[in-house]
Length: 533
Image (cartoon, rainbow, N blue to C red; front, side):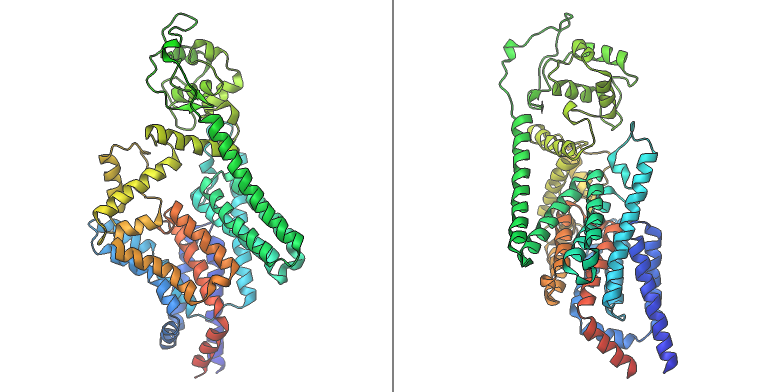
């Protein structure tokens, strides 16, 4: 009896250690993340008691349904022509099978360890953010710096997903967990600091996820508050924010993207130095409400720019954009003509801003408003010309259009899990869509990816397996889980969440954690009964 208890305790401690290691490595190390998963699996097998574990799974269909997401990837392998890519996607999806099964058939976590995992995750994300900040400030970002490079351990979009979850955990513990009532102020300060880093990261995807989930949190908090002034105050905050967001968007669209009337025949044909202006060929693109395509003299621009800058006119700026177009947009934003006179009206700080890739003198800093303006400008250009290269937001629109085209051609069987990327590349090439040369063919939409890969039946099961476990376990009344699911579902529309190893482990760990902790008392009783018998 004592030997059995010791062995049980040993395996449980290894299980806890593996989970803690996994949580620590979610934002920090892909290598140790894999090590923790392997350790979990080895410990689970070595623990034995397979008959009891199978019995537990039979009585817990929600876990089996969640784990069946892995089977969707196997289904997509059946008609894949590119088996190497398909097998790579299947291997990447293994955590979908391992974590739910292992966590559901191990001794469930008590509340203390559940809280520890949440806090350890937040701490790990915070440490990763601090390391990124240290690297940023030590790297002298005044010259050639891309905000996407701030995130060292994973893509800035994937990292923003973890940051938003950390903020939600802190707010949930501060307002809804009595255990942390005395630490509420510290949790709120930590959430504000992480919010500041999220804004500093300048990920539109992350900020969109943050706004969507935080609005839900505020509304729920207001609804549950017994104090009337808190309830109405929070609701007023939501309305005020939505009004502000709408007002800023409306102002920027009308101020910067409303086309002015122009008489082409009344335009000057010569510069102040007597050189002819290029004939206006494109009156669709605006910068600060001014046409980029008028009053351009390439001869004078090229000559004078090369006199004031070390970056040649026919080269690229620090953001990888053609600097000739950056110059034209910047001059247009100031209401200057694109000629020698316009160049000589630029100050030294204007020259430096153009070299960095800044296209509008109003947004020379790396602020959130500047990033929002860039996104609106990308939509403006795509709407007017269809151009999407180097424009992350508008490229996602054409990616979705290409995905829908592939789905219409293969609605029932799909094209196979290994052929999605190559098919996306082929469609964009056939349609002469100019996208980033580094683009691998990712649709940046999880639902579109699954539909393309497996057809309508695989897609239907994917949605069912995503939602049914929560319905079966009646998790809809759990605020933190609801915030997590909102975060995941919105992310799947914006990015292909489960096609990254980083995000897939994050998703399945937290989903399994919520599922297995809900029935911890019943499962604990079942395990103890089976072990003792």
